[in-house]
Length: 74
Image (cartoon, rainbow, N blue to C red; front, top):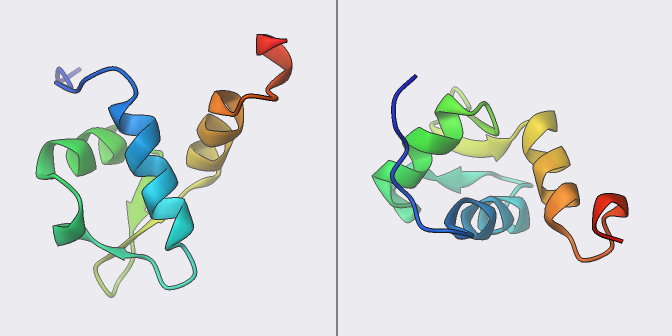
């Protein structure tokens, strides 16, 4: 598996950014390329036919697990 070089919390921050723009998706050039590649490898996002990045179910779950009210944190 390729190594994903990101800082702690960086993937969650960008997942939230994509989630906030999810209705139409987010252009790939709005996200650092290493982050986009990492999220694609982890299957948290997918690229649409129009080239927009949108969350997958796995990405939504990752955001829920990161939220302050997550059951495993509590």
